[in-house]
Length: 254
Length: 254
Image 1 (cartoon, one colour):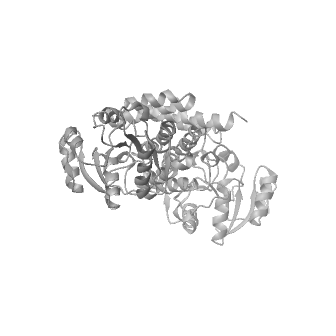
Image 2 (cartoon, chains in turn green, cyan; image 1 turned 120 degrees about the vertical axis):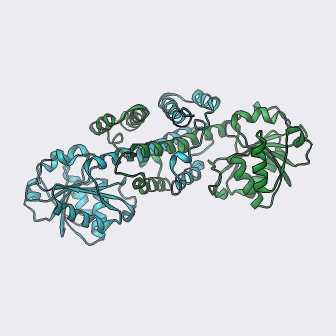
Image 3 (cartoon, chains in turn orange, blue; image 1 turned 180 degrees about the horizontal axis):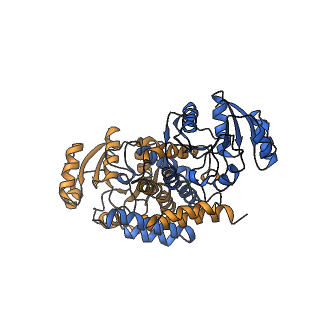
């Protein structure tokens, strides 16, 4: 993979472009459905802008890397010339649903935010492809960025993606709700940070089910009722359903 | 506070006893409602066992530190002799609900698991007391363990405790559910650890609402529907309600 074209100008495209350039892999140009985004992206990384897919289809590149939203991935790849090799970064799009002869998957299991540094070396990449040659090429490319590269079929990738929504997106929303709860309090969200860092640190040596604590884990109905009294709206519903899920997991089997 | 008696033999008692002994503060003895627990605890830390509260009430100690479940705290403290100074570690018990003339709060905002090392120095301690002299003594005692000691009224403490349930207990349950989702998959929970560590690391420099990602944050109804199709039971309900809460937070105001 000597020369790569990128489609997309979002968080994933940004981090992969940065990582690939750091490894001295040539990125030839970028296409994004919003021309202004392509221009800004191209300026930042010193790339050519493909004004449309036709221009990209005529370009001489070894790989087209598609880093767009999951729901745009399939439709977009079907417009890429059959002689191009293509790889996409989505966690949930099934390879068999994509109608292109030379397509594969290059899925970094990470939540990227533009400008927030990520150590790609520790990011697991999951590879899949319609033919073995492309699969090996994508594996080698990922190996330049990371030491955690594995082959995974579409089903496994989609299971990982769903699990990651719980482990990353939902946990982050819990932090947001927790911060909202302290908005009019003398207590500050910052006070919770040592608790949060310590909790995650325990995962290095313990399974999450073995370190569960809290009122629901202790089956402390009195505190649960007291907390529910103070909550309303989404937070109340979320408190109820997660507490009940914890109680079921730890107490129903006793 | 030269000599402290501890009531309770659970996670909080264990960590406070360890921390206090490390600072060369004398722990005289321990009382726990289960005698065998008192014995094991006393043996581990080299303490006397108070066989009942009467024995403890006769002991010469400067402070009785009560580290028992929230729902046992008030009832227990009311049995402690009025001449003893008492402090309890609960997040949610209101000081005004406790009928003892010399009582205060010594609340470490941390989730303790026996044997799992905690850096107490970084743990915020919240102090409150019925009289100022005891408040200052408890502040000084906490200051020997931590560099994050603050006075907080019962209401603030209880708000912090509720926020901590979201930030710590509920997030940990999300990890458990995420691990359950991968139980019969080729994907492993270990694959998610870099994602998890990176997500929490971002909180050092960013507010949680600014780093939210995922299908609900993107309002990607197609992926949400695809995920819901794969889920059942608690996980399905939890996915629905948290996704809807994220969508409301980020999209309804647009």
